[in-house]
Image (cartoon, rainbow over all chains, first blue to last red; front, side):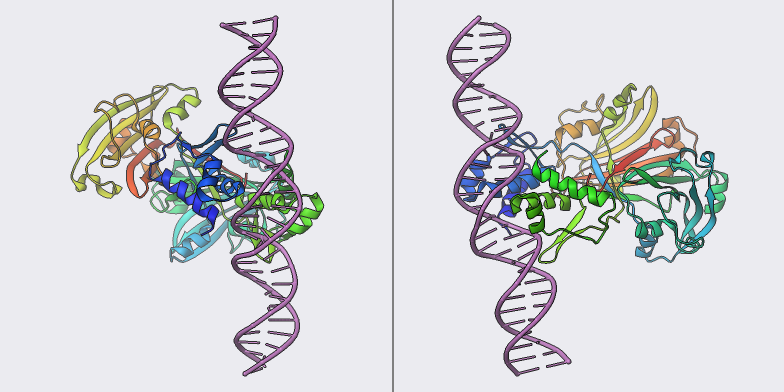
Length: 230
Length: 230
DNA sequence: GGGCAGGTTATGTCTAGACATAATCAAAGG
DNA sequence: CCTTTGATTATGTCTAGACATAACCTGCCC
């Protein structure tokens, strides 16, 4: 273990154990320099990592303090559905319902995707059962789609992940009732609860794609693990 | 702007613009040193920040490369409900239904909270309308609860946030139907779709609390913004 | 007392080196 | 041909300073 790593973990341990509580001052850099017998840059680097991990705050002239870890946040993994299902050991396939170019903004509604766009609808299956209904718009000005039959067998999400880099994303997650058409497609009762994930993706300010995925409530949980500074 | 910040943003710009694509090599440190006329530590610090932001990878002897940004992840903010509702400009209040100590593990089921625990049930209101039903278990071995009437007026989530630090959390998000009791409490139709967020919280390996919050599907969306390295 | 100037102090940024470490390649040896 | 060894090279860690900057304190002057 490197020295800076040792300094870091010593302080982290004192924080995690509760010995140092939020708001407490941690030793001055010069005290740590004296304690570990190293250069200030080494101590500083260790403290910098603790800042990045969200465990401490540093204030000029004042010193460094244990941060108030009270921001509830979690890293939510939203993986490629094909990989997700394969990882569960279930057979995956995708069926395409609709794939056409839309040119009028009215068709595109609130998605924020400018015309012309490619409208794709289809269903993801896991183990032969419908797993998610997907409706997607792809901005044709930004994304070069190679062939008309690209999405016959490969889900557009997988294709985009491997072909188009993105820089920003926004997710909205909510619960909805299945309703008529959706219930039929997913083989559900009309008022079954479904989890709906909407995702907007941009690349340097230009909209890339919008997708709305609807999962039967009893077949999909989003799980997020979080350790501040883990 | 500091020099290291300038180096960082120059490279970031070239990545975000697409000039440098995933897998591309970025200039060697010694080239950047020559280009900016600075010390290697300064260049190194700029690159280190890019690594932390997830934009590049560095490999010893090999060089630094633009990272493959293909991991779909989002930072999901799960704030204090009282603050959330106040920020929307709506009046917030909390009503307590149940608050009792449970000693038998059977009462605690799958929550992972060891007995003895405090079982709390109540409802969060926004603008006079029920906003979320909450059922919570607090591990009494880990959390010192001050007074029996603490949770009469303050929601346990708010109190915990301000009194008990935590180190790990796990979330599960899913869609459920309201059903009988819940529908009555939230003034919903029995088969209305609800968003259910479950959260387990630990402190250095010891369970602190488990909470299940159920929101009417039409009153709450989880929104997550994400910029890799923003 | 109120406000401003100047000193003190802790962190922020930076320099110009040093040695450590790991990956790669080429040459020597079996 | 295959393996090992050594040289090379780029990054990783570290030192011992320097000056900059921001916050706080003290004392002076009005």
